[in-house]
Picture 1 (cartoon, helix red, strand yellow):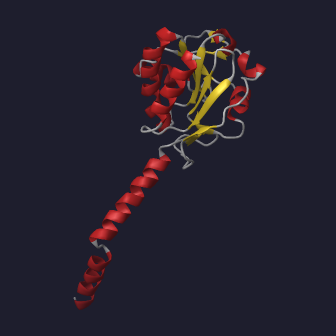
Picture 2 (cartoon, rainbow, N blue to C red):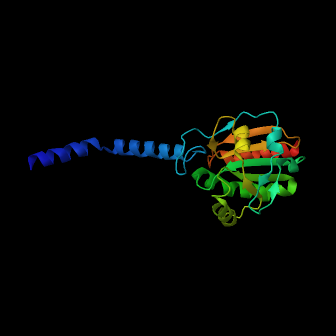
Length: 205
């Protein structure tokens, strides 16, 4: 009995209010980091702790990306070159990726607001188009994604990601095809306002 009481005393001493608060904050930070991005090369359900950040812009969309035939959820095909002369956001995502699911509603809002001013968005799932067809179509209906949605072939994903396979990734493309800004991961506090700012500047340019 005395031994049991001593163990309980030790537990009470260990879990001081300060330690409880510190542990909670640490866990919250880990959860926050885990939601920032997913690794498209890993199985569904995995996540990466890579920080959400704008990455350096590239020169222009490569020809193999611009001219690739992209299968859409409407069973049609599009090319990114079809959007020449428009300000374009290309979003790489997947239905199983938590941060992607958090980002999509923000993209829907931005599209509704800025589409009349010339913005276009193309969402490209990195999933297998045959295995994920029903899931992606259900997702598009559920989230009311009014912009073009399809699948990204492996060579297109590789060319765009340039070695960083975390998703979501969003590329803001100018009317002349230059990549103005690349966003890797998603933060609900910083990504939407940063993307909005860049879109507004691109539309004015």
